Image (cartoon, rainbow, N blue to C red; front, side, top):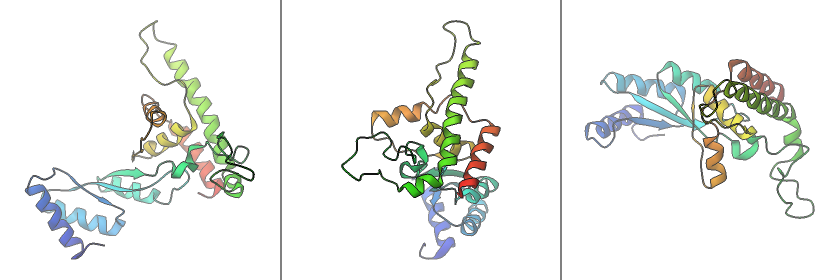
Length: 212
């Protein structure tokens, strides 16, 4: 909600640009209809909405339609919470609910209920199989280079990286918080490779099977 509505917001954005406070402007969690109206108003003045930011992940695809809407309006979708608090990482499963972490005590079953993890079993299995598949694909690609000339690409793909690059494959920019070295390495490991169209479809199918 913005006092004065979309017109006032457009006027404010135009002021920000004309005063050289920013070259580009964007939105956060704006509905498709309001975003379209705002884009029309800015376009009429020779400017445009550059980005729209909202949550989206492999286990929370409620905003999938927004990604498509943004692309049609030439707006870059920027997705937050791309690991869905850790659920989309594939680290926690029904057979490994603590994610391999040390138990906090008797009865500790990790951050998610077993019921939630069981519901996503099919997706997590596909994630893990794609991890192996992508690793193999990258290995085959690098083996074709002469010694010392192969590009430096991560060859230890994780299910977390599969989840991050899924968001990228959907046409969005994944905004991943980095607060330690391990997470920094996870993000860097996403560079230099992409999921194929077939691999994305495998994940889509698994998501639908799990009801996400």
